[in-house]
Amino acid sequence: MPPQTSYDDGKGNWSNPRVQAAHRASYHQTAPYAPVSPNYQPLPAAYPPSYRPARLSLGRRLLSILLLLASLLTGLAASGAYWAQTNLVSAAGFEQLTAPLAQDADFQQALAQAVTADLLASEPIASYLGDGQSQAWYGGIQNWLYDQAENLMSQSTESLVASEAYPQLWQETIEATHSYNFSADNQPARLDFSPFYQAALTGVQNRTGLTLGLEASSLPGARVALEAEEGPYPVSSSLRALADFAAVWQTYALFSLGLLLLAVLLWPGKRLAFAAVSCLLAAGGSALLGLISSGLSLTSSIPLPALQSAALFLQRLSEAMTASLASSYYGWAGVLALVGLGLTLLAILSSLLGLTARASHRLG
Image (cartoon, one colour):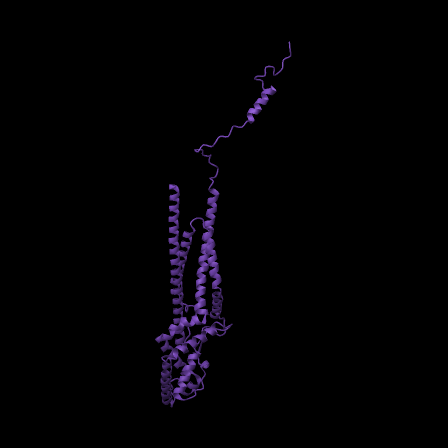
């Protein structure tokens, strides 16, 4: 009888090498390719495919908003610096800003009275005429002379402010004040009325035919200090800082435009609409600053001079400055609002064209 083997029948025996080979072949055999059904839907992943793009989009929106806020702040600073450069630092602009004061009848009258009082209080005249209230035995004659001199000087100064030469004289006064305050270094700020005082003094001398021996610079109201002579000089320092700030208005403007452009480019989605909203926000901020500027009082932080003419000049100058600044901000608000409305119309038109194109593509 032949010996038995473990694979004598070749069937059903896993130790048979032929069975093992056939099993391995069937295990590694791949199914033929079959096309994916149109209704096939993959199993949901742990995170949706749009998770990371949505997070990136949110980050871009936040960055665009931050850039927009920085652009608005620098833009408003640029507009204020431009106004300061053209209306305060510029001599021609300052003359134009103060030109309405030359037509102010109340200010002219106060200035004429102040000059008259200063002339009468000057040492050469006061030593002869006194103060008009002398009680000496010769006081009657002296007081009468004082009244005559006062009437004469008052007529002279009032005729000066009413003359055709007054506008030119006022311009010289403004030029002297502006030139001193924006060129003074480590000196107190002041108002320089010396050209007007010199003209008034010359008019009195011509009327009387007397040489009074007075110089306009020696009169107490010719140069009115706005801060203590011994220092410190906060007004003068503020004017120099204002000049430095106004000189770089172009840098602020370019920086603001660059930030705005970058914010628009980074904004995911409808950039025209974002630009329109940005302009409208800038218009609102500018209008708000105009409203705030109209209520400012620049003389509240400095002591007013004792002389009525100088105090009135500062008050009227403060009013003119705040009105001009508010008007400037309102003007920028109007321009930005028009640009914002124009961009809004373009954004709406762009959206309508996009909808029309998509509808035509579906129908085609």
